[in-house]
Length: 282
Image (cartoon, rainbow, N blue to C red; front, side):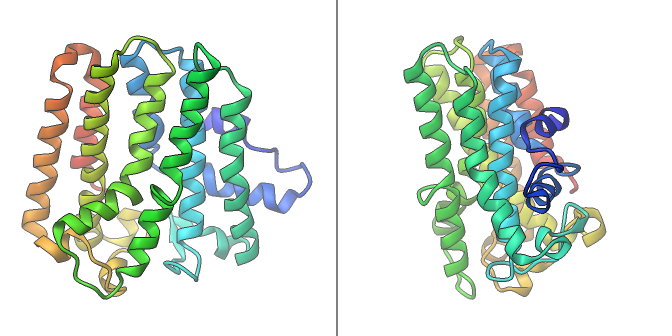
């Protein structure tokens, strides 16, 4: 994936050099690559060409990276550490970081548009729509807006889930669905089960993030630990407590495995990813 992303991103020597260096800084050399892994695992389930999946995985990761750059800006979370290194606006400057995010978003759609990813133009148009919805006001950006508006408030568990289904879960679901849509081996019912799996692991990812933010060091996380509590953001830990949050993550892992039951050995990678998401320590 790192090799593919290097190929998709503009070379640092291309004008404007500083902007392109910032884009590459934001995307390359760090991160768990959970979304690309989900795209490849779902693509394997759907008998997809790995070359097609590589493109959608790269596009989703660019959207994810741009969202992190913008989330870290002083006008939002105001963080100085990401993936164990200075955040983009600290390494460069706020204006360059803002533009790097602005440029990564359309680049994601550019690479989706300039590669053949589906067996028909109509199917590929639908894939573009899926990523757009996951990224926009009814997906990731909308979830971040709700998150910012919730600072200092106590949300109910359904309200918290409503937020994170969008903020974190939308792009995770898109990664799995787009990976599967690069192939042709799943019918509508199977795609529905894959979406249930992806929705469940998306929520589990956020629950575990909240737990780790509470009880893991900054050095291990590669980002500022305890930030959510310091900023009075509602989290699964603040809403239901640490022990219940850990138990919820395990329940979501079981739900994810159940959603994959009918796929048998074909879904081994997806099962392993559900385990990784819940059992990870960083």
